[in-house]
Length: 442
Ligand code: PXG
Image (cartoon, rainbow, N blue to C red; front, side):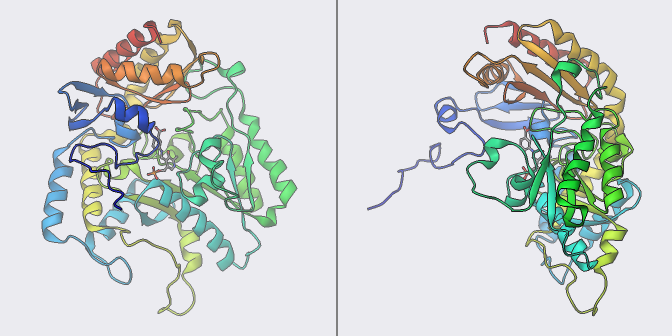
C-alpha cells in the first residue's frame, strides 16, 4: 500500500512547516513569490512592506544586485570544495574580512550553516578549550531563562524558552540558567536600555557559588534577547556578567545571531555595549539571509590554545560538509561589500532616534502594555485576551499581512526589525499600519 498523498505540484500537505501553525496556514496560505529592497510580493499579487527583514536576516534588503551576481558567478566557477583538509580562497578572504569588522581580539572564525549550528559549535569550543588547557572539570554551561539559542540539542539545553524544550527529554546535563532581565513593572515604556535590573547579573555569582567555578565552562546570552520578544539588557548588566566570568575563568559567549551585522548601529552588539565576550555567535545577516551560513568568532587566546601537539594532527574534531561553502562565502563577501558601500553596519545608529520616536507614538493604542526599542529593533507588547494567550498578537499579524505589512509575533508581543535600508517615510508607513491594526478589533 502506498502512503503517498497523491500530491500535485501545488499541494501544501507534504511540507511540514517549521515553527508554523500548519493547519491554519494550509487553510489560508501566505506565500511570497518575489522580493525587492523593502518589499515582498505575495502570491495574490499584493505588495508587503518588510518590517522584520525576513526573519531578522535580510539586513541589506531583498535581491540586492551585488549578492545576486556574486552567487551566480560563484556557482559557475567553483561550486563546491571539500571543507576538510582542503579549501578555497574565498573562505579565507571572508574570515579576514569578518575579523576586520569584529571587536578587537576576535581574530579567528569557524564556519557553520545556521545560528543553531553556530551555537552548538561555540559550546563545543568552550568545553574543548578548557580540556586542552588541562581544565577538563569545567563542563557546565550556563544559559538564561527566555534565552533562544536555536533548536539543536546544545542550544535548547542552554535556551530558556519552555515550549522549545519540554518535548525533548532531559537535554544536556550540567546546564543551569540565570534569571531573565524582564521587569515590566519597573521598566515599561523605557526607551533604549532599562534603568532597573543591572543587578540581576549578580545571580550568576550565586550559580557559580552553587556549582563552584571549577565546574563551569561558559555562560551564553543574547546581548539583546530577540525571539522571546525583545528583552533589552538593563544598564550595566552585560558588563557585570563579563566581570563575573573573568573573575572565575568562565568563557562568555554572546549569541549575536540577531544583533550581528549592524542591527544596533555597530557591526556587533559587543561594540555597542562596549563589552568584549570570548566568542561571538553569528549567522543570518552574514549572508543577508540569502544562503545559509553562520560564523563563530573566537579570540586568539582560545584559538591558540588548540594549536599544540603534532602538526599533522587535527586540532579540533568538529566541522560541517558545508563549512565555508564557496557559494555561501561569495554571498557573504558580497553582503559585506553591500554593507560597506552603503554604510549599513552603522546606519541603524542614525535611524535609531527616529525609529524610537515613531514606535513610542503607539503607546496610546488599545491593548499596548509596553514598548521597547534599541538600534533598529522594536517590540510592542499587548495585553493577552483573557484565557487565550498569543491570540491577539497572531490576529494582529494576520491583519497586518492582509493590509500590506510584515510584522513578527511571539507570545503577545509584536517584534520589529526592518532591513537596515528602511527610510524614515517607510518607518512612518509601518507604524501607521500597525496603529490601524491595533485600533481594529483584535
Ligand atoms: N540564536 C539566536 C539568538 C537566534 O535568534 C538562532 C540562534 C538560531 O538560528 P537558526 O539559523 O538556526 O534559525 C536564532 C534564530 C523570531 C525568529 O522571529 C528568531 C530566530 C529564528 C526564526 C525566527 O524571533 N532566531
